[in-house]
Length: 260
Image 1 (tube, rainbow, N blue to C red):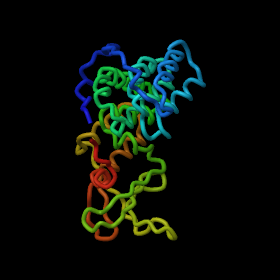
Image 2 (tube, helix red, strand yellow):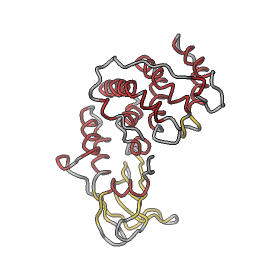
Image 3 (cartoon, rainbow, N blue to C red):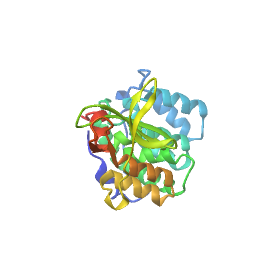
Image 4 (cartoon, one colour):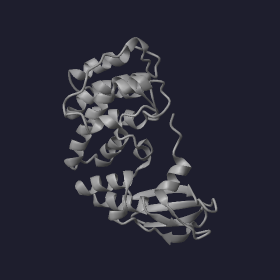
């Protein structure tokens, strides 16, 4: 996976290098090469629900895999994003899946300036405390190359994280939500049994992406999100062997795919 991180903090807002995709080589999920640029052209001239719907289906496969045409469309969507929620959301979905198999790493690298500009826009949008805060936050995580958390982070109202205890390999369920914040053994008849309270990491001890996520949430007044992050990057006790481990580290080790 190419690294785009260095562009994010160095690009002035509103300025990224334009480039022209060779659409003849950019197939969408309908195996067409000409329909996506036509749809983008329509959207440049105004909102069009039918065009947005078709574009989403052509660029994303069941909201999971992104097509080559989706990578090629990023700069166009970024240009529309400041005035279009649909453009912002679709560009965010593409970014969240950009570490997957699409065969267009070179094209993604060519889009680095546009992606950095997108990050600036997302950050500005977050500061407005929008209704789509979590969607925007996850998109910004993808821009920051935190693809795993961009795809799995929830709002901590009803979140579960399944992982393996690093000491005894027991399957442990970690719950972070309104119902409680605990580690447990999940029994499909009895529910979560042998619960142990989580140990959130104090703010001053957070580091890396956990610290960045927490600082962003606090900056924007997202208290529930910030508290959830401090628990997610905190400690849990295994109900089986009583060992203590860092939740985020073990969850990533169990669930994070190996990137190319």
